[in-house]
Image 1 (cartoon, rainbow, N blue to C red):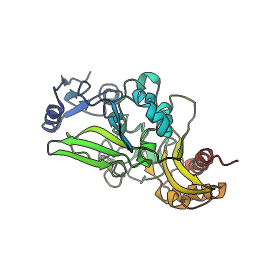
Image 2: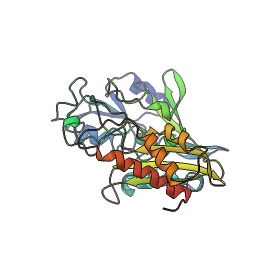
Image 3: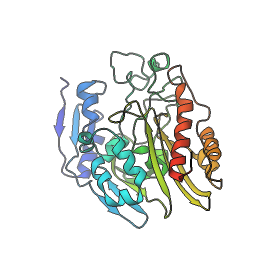
Image 4: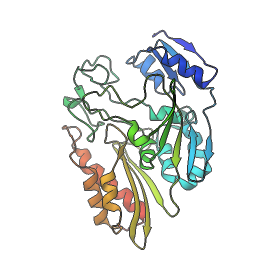
Length: 330
């Protein structure tokens, strides 16, 4: 068993100081990913776990145009919030599509944003070639079994998938991530929070060591907008997405006047499909428009034999979610 020191700070400032001062320290919240990686998979090393579970970072506070969601709010708590159900239905759908009720009652919103990839090669310490775990070693997934891997934001250096359901609608909404560090507070747009694999797959986001997510600010959908989250998977529960899409549209007299679209199950980061949004905005809500948006969204994919099927599957997922949200007949 991996040995580590367990500590519980009294406040947020103390937690940030503890982790920032110790390169081998890490935060512990719900623990649904952290303990797996440390104790079960043995692919990360943390000599000290700083338990933030009792800090005052929990709860949902409504505003005029957004929701403030504490980082320690659980997925189940957010899914049960009446305002989320009423004004952010596709966020609720994404939450309920993720994991199991038992895990959702433990897993936190901040932890979901920071979850590590489910790539089988990253999580198997017996696999030597993993640039994300061992920089410069290669990527075993490129030549191995890669059905659950990425086609967007991918490269020969890494095709590991970002598996979050929740982050897909959150990135579509231009959610802001609020962070506390030793130098104070800062806000990071979720669209700028994650880093593409590039030449350094081991660097996954813009947080410095010791910075702590305190809450996220989630914009509410505008009046009259409709939304939906579609997750395509091998079985109906407790399964990661092969492809997924979160869409929100506002339609006036048959014309799309506002559009948001993001993708999951296909990219190394939660993928905002801005090119598709451009195609949709100002266009009629028709199947032809939706297919054009899908073509724009899945542009220049990087595929290997195991992931080539995702190109067309992702396009069909986009068309279907847009059709469902708009109410367009088949």
